[in-house]
Structures are given as structure tokens and as C-alpha cells.
Image (cartoon, rainbow, N blue to C red; front, side, top):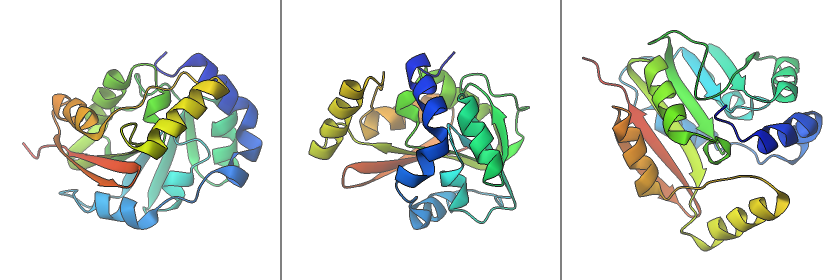
Length: 193
């Protein structure tokens, strides 16, 4: 399983209360990232999407949440989303079946981030985009977050923007990233070929 088991268990237990404490998604940053798509974004997959807070920030006609924690998928359904319990490294979707994949503040919880990125690339339609929003461990706030997550007991692995950009490019996507303080966004666009 590509999700760290302890992290998944924690999110499973806290799902009912998660929306009370989770930060509000940056809808403008997500829309800006989706603008790199070379196609209309009608079907969005929010991987590691928990209760659907990332997907909720976007007015896409079909929004699907995939998460390894059963409690999170149940809560996402209560929040009005189609939700599937799934590991990020083995997504239960056919190749080229979604226009965009969103991974918001979740990749660092995945046990095999390279396979998760490759799976996201696999399910993207030509011209679609993978949008990953993460915390920069090279920033002061990012280092504090990383230490805090480890003290809490999470098995988190954070990535510098350049490193994650290379991972996205290695998955065959045209990758670019933008930093904003201690957070950054990597966008990878699937080729139209």
C-alpha cells in the first residue's frame, strides 16, 4: 500500500472532525494551476482528497475523491462527492479517464510517491493536468511542519519543489512549479500526442 499505514489510520479516526480544523483550500491557486490544461476540465480526481476539501474549491462538473482512509471516503460522500477508497499507487480508474488529478497536502503521506505520481499520469487524458500542492521542507515553516508531523507520529516525507518537479517530469508530464512562501504547486501536463 502506498499510503503510510499509520497516517491512514489517523485520518480514518479523525475524518468526522477533519473539516473543522483543515485549512481552507486556495481556490485561486487551484484554478490557476488547472489553466495549464490543454483541454476542458470536466472530470477531476482528488487523490488523497480526504473529505473533498480540495475538490470543493473547484467548480468542475464531475469531482471524484479517492482516499485510502475509509472514514475519509465516508465523510466525502456525506459532503456530496463521489468517493472511492483507493491507494494512490494503484488507482481503480482506466488509463486516460480524467481531465485533472489534484493532490492537496497529501503526497507527503503516501508511502510510494513515485508510483502515486506515475498512476496520476496514467489516468490523465491527453492535455490534462496533475496539480500537486505541498509544503516546502526547505523553508523555515516547512521544516517546522515536518518536525511537527513526525512528533505527532506521521510517517511523512516532504519534497523540495525541484525534486518533486523532477518526479513529475519522470512520469512523462511537462512539469513546472510555483512557490509561494512555505507552500508550492507542481503542475504536470500530459502530452497531446
